[in-house]
Image (cartoon, rainbow, N blue to C red; front, side, top):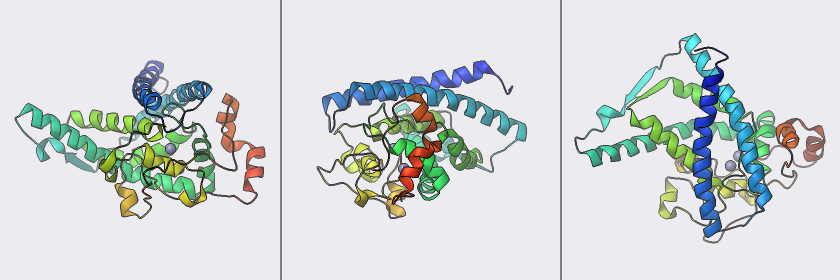
Length: 283
Ligand SMILES: [Zn+2]
Ligand SMILES: [Zn+2]
């Protein structure tokens, strides 16, 4: 693998954008049919634009990451073989095991993501970048992109530990990635549709909206992305009541509108001078 393999990077971009476009659009259909909030058309356009920029940069990061792993000869320390753990000759049961394995991998990956997310709220340098995502006022399945720097932080906190564990079974990475990708959009969607009792395992928009809430009483809650289990275990879960759909965003920061503002959000001194008066790190 070459460091500047443009075809490979373009492949990463097209594949990831395909996932985002399908899942975000499915969730937008739910937002239109069953809205908890209705937001401006401009916010959807902004969301699509930011995702394209973010995935373009992510394609470069993940390509360089894959080249670096190959150069360094990183080998997994532990192999989890779902093929031998769950096995059936029946095609339907076998497909069920595939999904179950995918869910287990997604839950395991979310353990690292959970602690990365706690760090993003606790360390001022990481918070400035993460705050780009939290500043969004018109949060929807399309308008939910993180700052460009997110894949760099994800590579360090999540992908590196996971590179040391190999999950063997053809279907697992695909199912796990599909579930995680869908979850990203569902959890930011402004639809009223939620997962009911399944919420005690899998996070949905109602649960994650609390994490984005502008209200002080919701701060430091619901860090999980795919699963709510780590929030339950580490006592950061907040279960919203039936009609609890708070406004989202940061009281001290406006949502970035232009491309420049989106890219420069963490580094814009005028934002942070203003914001440090009485606010500081949000926990
Ligand atoms: Zn957060
Ligand atoms: Zn979020």
